[in-house]
Image (cartoon, rainbow, N blue to C red):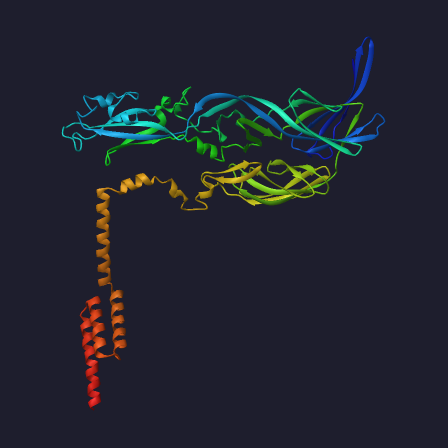
Length: 566
């Protein structure tokens, strides 16, 4: 038998505030044994709140209404654990292409054999690479008489597309068809001035008893997040979302033996014959899982649309603190009342940067209160609504907001238990972020990520050089035609430079001026030194007017002798 008296107490001080809804009830449970009934009065609180670590205070009263103690309640984010379903085993690999040319009637190039090669056929010319998983092909040459061949006819280009392992590790591709819900709760009980703390985990429908208090998780709102339907790659060094990442290597149950795997035909989009080097080239897709797991845009921990994904050993855990949780608290011989700190909150914006009509912009700010801790709800005219942790000592925070315009200048309202405040949100956003740039959230912190952030083209303009295929570039450069062109170009440059120096008026005027200066400097020197220096100059320049300067140099001492005789 149970007599139930229920009364509601909805705590809502400010419209729009981050509120805690409490439904209070009294229940009397009676037990019968040998015809004797024993009844106890219990106080029941059904608390609906967000699991964002907000501390909620409840006063404990006796039957006379006297406060006997206090219960502090804090709920961490809703944890959702993936029940993994293994889809397939994966290996990290790189695709290679090797080709061999055969003249007509040589080797396997006989009687139209090239047109009838199947992908799994054994080709003697390609036996060196048959131990790797791959496919064999053949392309006939276009000429009627192949270069270097003794017989007329189309030559054969046998080639094999095969995969080589990048590591010995075996990865798992999993999905999450179902999830298990749980939530961590921190409680603190203050009685007679002494604080006792406890942390425990609750699952839906299960009850945890501590001292004379029973906690039951009644209702959980599951997150409607497409990311929870994603596939994940699990390895020894991490977990990553398998988004737009396809493996063309099928290993089935033979993942441990790489040679038993099978490479799909569409691992390469196209192949073509490089006539100059007589080689087959292909555009193929590698699948290097180690790079995928190190990619901060896909590796866990990661936050997508307010859903945090993290790794716990080889388990995938999702967390959310934006969905309400309903918790029932029962006391024996105690009554409960809620305590609320009345305080106002103030948002101090620092910056708003990023792009509009894209993945979002980053807003950094801090929030302060007049007293204690509080949670504030912020509403902006542009339909951006978010919450913030506030304290007497400001708490720096970042959040990703969405906008559809470049110039941002709007007044946002801050709702807290002590009233409404506001602040101005201002910023200049770009139309689009640089290529391969994206706003990501790691460990609760938002930032603009650029692929290879340590060596990206924004901070290092030469970083893109590392992506060039230097091996093939050097191979193309080191050829007879290219060497001949380099030598010819060098000779033409030298000839052009000599002609320029010989017939350029400016350079000829410069040499005349230099020669005149030399004559002036040498006029006061000895006859022998003058002649020797001009002889050296003539050998260097080799012009007729230098001979005139030598004659002038000889004439100078003759003139001096005439003056002495006079």
